[in-house]
Length: 361
Length: 151
Image 1 (cartoon, chains in turn blue, red):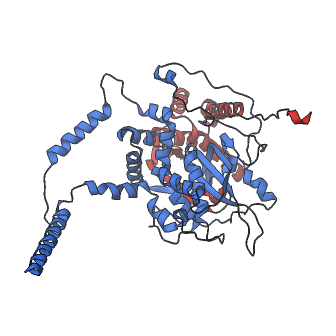
Image 2 (cartoon, rainbow over the protein chains, first blue to last red; image 1 turned 90 degrees about the horizontal axis):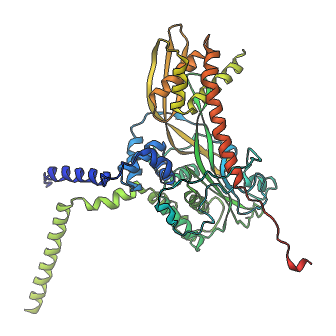
Image 3 (spheres, rainbow over the protein chains, first blue to last red; image 1 turned 90 degrees about the vertical axis):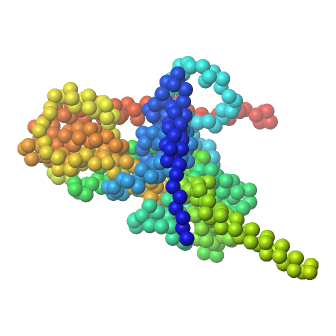
């Protein structure tokens, strides 16, 4: 029997009113604008776009404001919104080799053509709190210099020319789409990359770390990490030609990994790949490490049983909306379920007590 | 103009309009003083485009994630049709972009090119150049220390 219980409308209404008041905060302070969030919390905005799987900095900023800075809640809001949008089409694959880089570093070649461009990075900061930020003050504009090379070729391209790194299998097939069909295993790499691109940064970071500590060891170097603007080209069916409809910010990481070769292939380096919306380098690096770990089968490597090598484990648990939905739903009323558990435990105890009395007689 | 060249030119101006700052585009178009009559062929509609990447940057495509896009189509009284696909959720920007696209296909082309497209192109170039200059300032110049044992 299923018993429906009603109630709590007044409490819920008042709770949401308090939520709104708390979100607004001290009325003596100015209202926080979404334009400020977009501009000043750009990395939070990037994470919400990447894991919300929808590039729209204005909406991401709105979601962060609505969620009071809870980024997973904000991602949830974006995921819910995106399901309401009609799909106009697919872009052509973005050409990251032609990215207008604001940051581009390689950990494997010092003198890489195009140069090591640090960009606006936390690297080499001292991680000391800057107390001057407590006070308001103007920041002087960043220095400028004459640009040297307009385009930065991919670093892995240099290794590829000598055949020292595995080439990526080409293909123009329409990739599978997680948003249209449920995850099927085994998943091809395109599906894995989509799942990782929208996967939780913290989960992927932990898995990536585990591979470095020996759980599915694959010796990564960051061949290249780049951040910048990339053109989005869309074929417009009603016009019969393609238009570059936008420029979006992306972060790309290519790892170069050891590979000793196999019976059929000479020793060469292999690759892991990370790509994310916005400036999201921790995410991109972690994604590349996990992507590489999941490629063990095609590279003929040993399955060491490491979590990062386990496709079903990784892909079924990397989505923070699925995960938080299931983990957090247990805080919602389970009165009836629990009542039956309670009955069961009471009966078992009663039976056990009766049994021991009978044995004593 | 041969068809391929005119298509390339149209794709270029549609791109300039799509990537323009919405406020600057509206101001430039208003200043032009053109407010032609038109009928909607497709009212501004907000949707999504799936952005694709390539495995390893060069390999097979995969779905990276979607982006919001607003599109519309309209027809001027003389039959010229304008289309717009602009990033984000700005119906007014899409309307102006489609109007400019239509006007660019006739007598007003020079005026629209001068008053709207040129400044938008310049602003985009300036934005790009400013970022490139800031990036260049963070380019590492390596130098080798003279070490004692080499003496």
